[in-house]
Amino acid sequence: MANIEKRTDSNGATSYRVRIRRKGHKTQTATFPRLTDAKRWAQQTEAAIIEGRHFVATEAKRHTMGELIERYVRDVMPTKKAGSQATQLQQLAWWKARIGEKTLADCTPAFLAECRDTLSREPIPSLATVPAPDAPERLRSPATVNRYLAVLSHAFTVAVKEWGWIESNPLLKVTKPKEPRGRVRYLSDAERERLLEACQAGGNPDLYLAVVLALSTGARQQEIMGLRWGQVDFARRVAILEETKNDERRALPLTGLALERLRERAKVRRLDTDLVFPGRVHPSHPVDLRTPWETALKRAEITDFRWHDLRHSAASYLAMGGASLAEIAAILGHKTLSMVKRYAHLSDDHTSAVVERMNARIFGDGGK
Image (cartoon, rainbow, N blue to C red):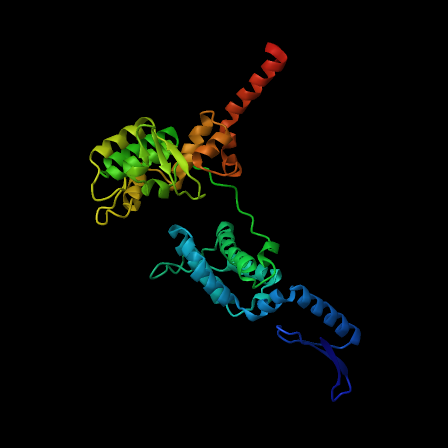
């Protein structure tokens, strides 16, 4: 029940204090300069308590962002893939250090938009022991800022759906930085030949086979390095990926040189591990190819090229070979066509041929 008390201070100013007490609920109080405002707040608040809507607003004032992040790390983070945990823990540590003391009620869309802008402007700490004095400041890219926002947004969503700490996710009202168009860097025929020769000449049997698999299947580096013999079906000529980035099962077609080299390796595979690419010292972990990969790039005189660009190369070859965007998406394991539209310009000849066949069919030879 609401109780409104009229008060007069030493200067003669009048105010109205509202106190709402209901069994099973924390007492709510507020002060207003006008009686009409006090009555309106009392009516709305009592109605919210009766309907069960006021609980969330109260919880948002009781819990801090630090509490939210700590609970998320303890209860939700262990359910995520090991590969993403380290990065997301680092991102959440940034949020906790900046806004950990704020209550959830304080974290409005406007406040979080300011945090987004701080993320974009803040220089990234150098990893070098002694940073070069003239080294330019490195800022977070729009894509990186969006990853910071994404992990916090998921924490808010869990707090809404499962914990009842807040009524809605405030980050849903915060605009994400616009990311540049996806990079398309693929190997020319000459570059591909030089790279494969360099991989073979380097004396690392793992590197050559891994690069051939990446170019022939478009698989991600983690998918290739984590491949196990139990996933390889030589009879069907496929490698089954049970765990992928999109959490969907996918089959990698094995053919040509990749299939031939994989069969050769199967004849001399190690017996102390099921990994196709086991580490030398720790066979239970995949081998680290960073050094031989960088060495091969230098020998092949290839610049501005990363391992993930092998995946772009495979997709580009598919597009230039006439594969449709839907077919490329299925091979690469993308859920939507948006990720593969970057290769559309490479399949112009194929698109033109499709239109030409359609015109010939409806207009006859004169439609060519």
